[in-house]
Length: 53
Image (cartoon, rainbow, N blue to C red; front, side):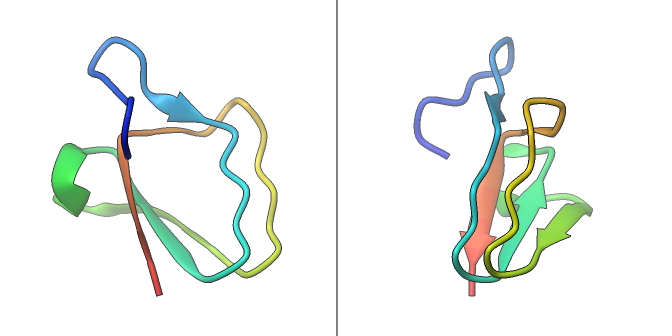
């Protein structure tokens, strides 16, 4: 995700497709959360990369 850093991860994702959110950069490591279309999550979900499908 553009703009996310180690110290300042992205937050409050809003999804209109299926999105798989990862704790690590470059969509690597374990899947942290899968968001269904239309799902809106709050500021508590912190992440560093996401892939849309």
